Image (cartoon, rainbow, N blue to C red; front, side, top):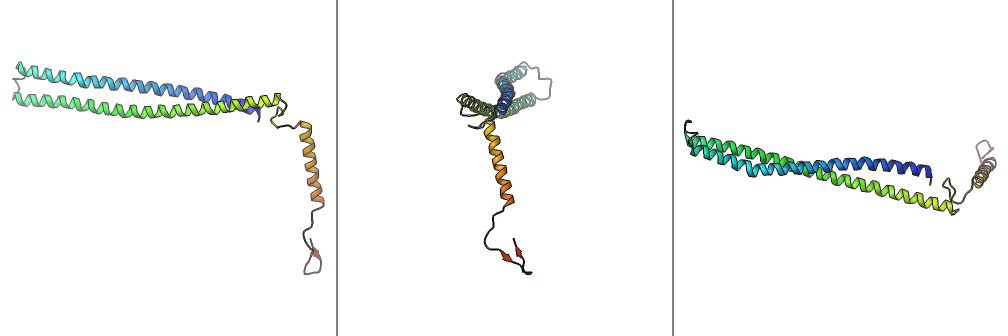
Length: 187
């Protein structure tokens, strides 16, 4: 384990976590705003439409619409317009509900990302603490190699290099030597 890499990884995970938390807060705020909008439209639908219809009926009863051609036609026309208002509110409500559901899905996704980032960060932090404890106990070297000192590593590399050179100088022979067409032996 390389403690420097681990520290950098922890810093990066922390920064990502902060960014994801900010994104999560923004999406949660949007969900609450949409819920407020949905509530306002529902109230409008429940209160405004009946109030408009009541006002139309009152105007009709008071004779304010008598100057128009036929009161029945006028009443039907006004009720048709109010129904259009109600349909418009229904469409707005349906679109806001859909947007709220999508936003709640995004919030759930961001919560999973934040949880995963925290889990990876915590795992790396535990690994770093365990590594530091093993260094203090003398089980590992500070550069992350278990039980080897720098001198042991250099000596091991030199021995490996010398063995490779010796193998190149005296390659092992396999089986019998073959004779070629000219009678000379091929190695």
